[in-house]
Length: 300
Image (cartoon, rainbow, N blue to C red):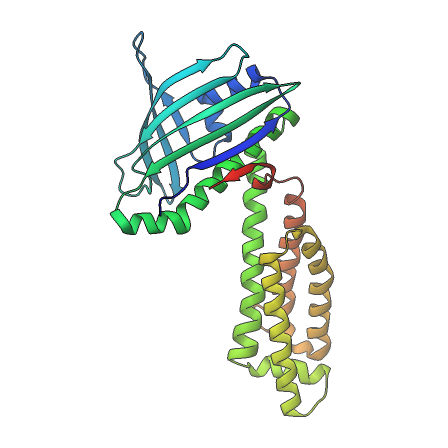
């Protein structure tokens, strides 16, 4: 089954000239588009297509370099515009071998409808196609949509792309951390290992029979795993962050009340939970008005 081209559309409350400049000027384009770290136009011969080179940093000092060609632009009588591109790379680390697409600009009253559609071929034959369909194509669609929302917020509100991306990545890094912490704490020390210290702290708070205490520890572990899964599924992360600001201090106080000697342990509940509380506050501060793919119409 052939994959569908990636399509992303957004309305920007700015005139078409402003949107055109922010997307066609490489110095501006590279600021808001997650897919490119830098874009460099090459010297252009008269009546020839505009060639450019791009670079995408993928971390750990590794970058993918590629080429591009503006194969044509069209200005219609109603001032709608189309810009077509051909791009590719020989870098084997890139999941894109070569592709083509276009950007379309349609003027509306006090706004511009801006959308793109592009498709590409992948390296590594059928294996590359499977990996693209499962992982990379959805990721490319998401990156395109987030980038379009960053552009929209930049042009409409003056919120710089760099500030938006700091909030965006801080928010999602803390989110993934909390998912990991809650699921790990519920699964490993409580369900799989049934760590003696977990049992002892629970018994000190709720003096029950040993078998009952083990059941309570297991139940708490299940609740923590469920809370970690809620972090994955629930959209309003700010509510979960506020809930954590209540839960984490209560858990810390409970551990101290149950056994004050835990304060002398390395990485004890106070230092561990205090770190999570600070990260929760950072998450709250960074999660306000972050870029989102949900503001776009998408087909991927």
